[in-house]
Amino acid sequence: MNKLSQIPSGSQSRPILLVMDGGPSVEIPGARVFDTSDCGPRNVFNSPASLDHLGKLMRGMDRVVVSCLAERRSLWVPLLRNAGVRGEIVCDPHGDSGDYFVGRSEDQAFQAVVNGPLAAHALIAKRAIDLAISIPLLLLLSPLLFVVALAIKLEDGGPVLFVQRRVGQHNRMFEMFKFRSMDPFRCDPDGELSTSRDDDRVTKVGRFIRRTSIDELPQLINVIRSEMSLVGPRPHALGSQAADKLFWEVDGAYWQRHSLKPGLTGLAQVRGHRGAVETEADLIARLEADLEYIRSWSVMKDLRILLSTVRVLLRADAY
Image (cartoon, rainbow, N blue to C red):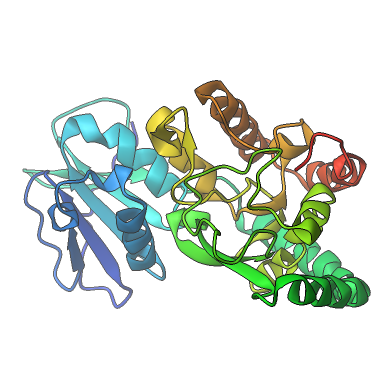
């Protein structure tokens, strides 16, 4: 066990966030404090709005220190590991569990949480691929995008784009763009009702652009804006359910899929996991593929997924 003698100090100029989640009292001068009890009766891990708020507080922080009950450390470790910040958890200074401590005192110690899942050079490479492909592709496809937008407008006079809040990297929400494929008065802003094969909400133009995945092309703008990546876990709507359970209620590992930017396509999609999620098994299969992708990311894997996506775009079971 590697133990350092210095105790984390709040005197440094870089910002620190202290998260109080029912653990021992901690004082770090100058730190911004977030108390999870302010989230109300819902557990912070079961509330996208609370996780979004926490993710925004973490952004730009040099350190995030969490004081929680021992039984909740297993929840905080993956969240901090995937948050892109230096994370620390307050723990028993007299324990000898093999954890790496960055500081200790008579009353408490600070356990470091290693960042992940990708190193800085890998993130830079992934971003470079996104821009190198998405910008030329958007320019190349602009005539098609114009024709599709015109067709949608002429069909019923409604808006061309469907804009929906989705959960993105570090559990922060963003506005995702799609070509509107449904009746403008029957769109589902929270995604509570999955689209079925014969869904009467889908317009004639919408049926074609959904079958060919053309409806997803406006997300190239999200990629350029750095809200999405070309390849990554597909972003889910907040109200999405599997067998009457919200997605994050099915498996506790669900939030770990947000450690990377969501993608236009992903490993789950090229394996055939597309369309409605009707059962818990459907969601778990997608989640396992997403987590496998995150654990084994490489530039070549992204390129292979992009090539595989081209081959599955016109599959007959897409709707």
